[in-house]
Image 1 (cartoon, rainbow, N blue to C red):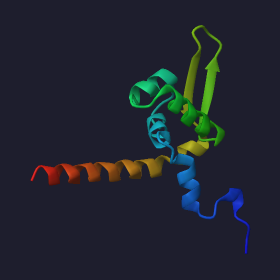
Image 2 (cartoon, one colour; image 1 turned 180 degrees about the horizontal axis):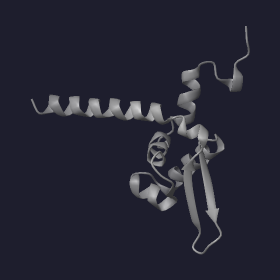
Image 3 (cartoon, rainbow, N blue to C red; image 1 turned 30 degrees about the vertical axis):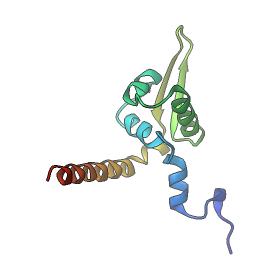
Length: 113
């Protein structure tokens, strides 16, 4: 029997571990199109608390999916962007978006009948 790499026994488990946080996929989705400051990300996810958003960003950075740049200005300016590894998630995030749009359309059609 082979020893699992990084403690994961399944590729799906690894993927969900990396992007399965409360806001991780949404953060990655928003960063697909541009570099964003912390405040811009927070405006796009108004339900996220500061604590939760900061935690999710730290985890994504630790896992190498996003890069954080801090500028030494007052007030502090912090920007986030996808890393090369993070950009490889684009097809997965696109598929999640397509599935979500289809699901929401189906739900809307069922409730309107």
